[in-house]
Length: 143
Picture 1 (cartoon, rainbow, N blue to C red):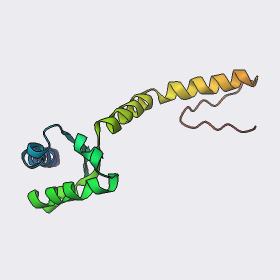
Picture 2 (cartoon, rainbow, N blue to C red; picture 1 turned 120 degrees about the vertical axis):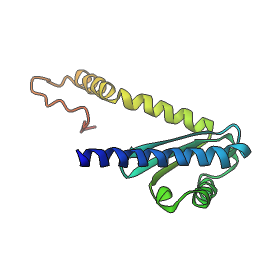
Picture 3 (tube, helix red, strand yellow; picture 1 turned 120 degrees about the horizontal axis):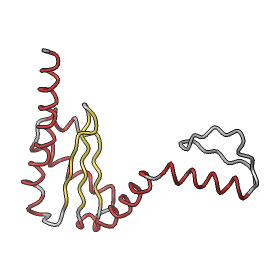
C-alpha cells in the first residue's frame, strides 16, 4: 500500500510540473503573444511534451523559434521541471493544420495500408491464399 501511495504522490508531483509549465507560459508568454495556443502534457513518467502554436513564428526561421522559449522556461521554472521537457514543438497555424492531417492519417494508417496492399494484390494478380497480414510492415518489390 505504501508503494501505491508513493506512486500516486509521484504522479501528482509530475502533473504539478505540467501545470507549472502551462501557468508559466500563460503568465510570461501569452501577454505578448495573445494569439498563441499552448498545450503541454506528460508523455511518459519522465517526459513532458510542449506545443505552442503562434502566428508570430511565421516571421522566424524554425531554428530561431526555440531559444527564446527555452530561455523563458529556464528563467521561470526549477531546473528539474525544465529537464523533464523532452520535446518542444513550435508551430505556426498553417504548420498545425498539416500536423493535424498527419494525426488523422495516423489514426487510420492500418486501414489505409491494408487498402493499399489489397489494391496492389489485385492490380498485379497476386495470390492471397497464404498471407501474413501485418499492416505495420508492408514491403513491395519489383518494377
